[in-house]
Structure formats: structure tokens, C-alpha cells
Image (cartoon, rainbow, N blue to C red; front, side):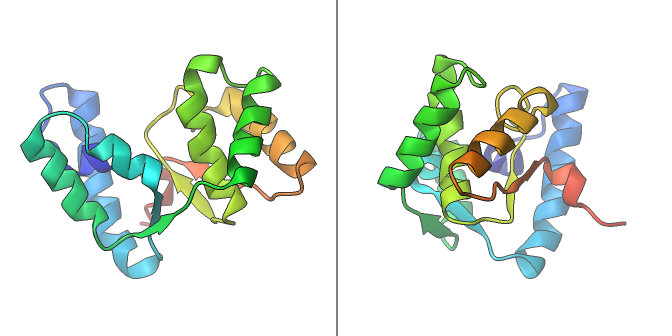
Length: 147
């Protein structure tokens, strides 16, 4: 989500729409929500072009960071072991697990392949609850914009 917020306008119309929706949501959200991210998000933001990375990191600078814990690693392993998420989505499982273990209300993402995916959400919610955690609402920025 942070990369959509900071990237140059895309030439792809769908990506451009996601960028604009993300920027609109962010403008409103910073005053409505307490913002959190994990160190995993910071590590991802550090990758790639140095100028783009610096822009992403400046957005993340005031955000409270959530730590990866033994509980979040265990929950991520359960999400992967149960087959709801493929092994190659281990970082995505960890994103979900960190947000869940820390009791976040929302996990906002544009990753609709392995995180904000209706086909896996029921599975994720079930596994989180079986582990005695209430999962966050997993959604895109567009779903949190109020008219």
C-alpha cells in the first residue's frame, strides 16, 4: 500500500486508480486512525530504487511499528501449514499474523493475491480464531473510504 502512496503516477489505468484511491484514503486516514506497520513493511520499503525507498520510508517514519513475536511466527506457520496460503506467501502470512496478534482493527493492503483475497479470508479468519485471536478486517484502502 505504501508503494502506491509514494510511486510516480502509473501508466496502467488500474494501478493509477489504486494510487489515487490510496492517496485519498491516506489523507483522511491519518487523522481518523492510529497508523501501524510492521518491521516487515519497513524491510520491504527499503528495497529497490534508493529515491523511491526514501519516499516510502519517510511515510513510514511517524508510524508505530509492531514487532514480530513468537506468537505471530507461530500463527503465520499455521496459516501456511494448513494450506490456505502457499509456501511462497510466507511474508504475506506473517503480515496477517503480526496484525492479528497485535489486535489491529484493520489490515489495509492492495495485495489481493494472498492477503485481501475473498477466497482465503474465511480460512484466515478460522485459523486465527482457532488460535484464540480475533483477526483484523482485511481490506483495500478503497473499502475504508467514506463518502
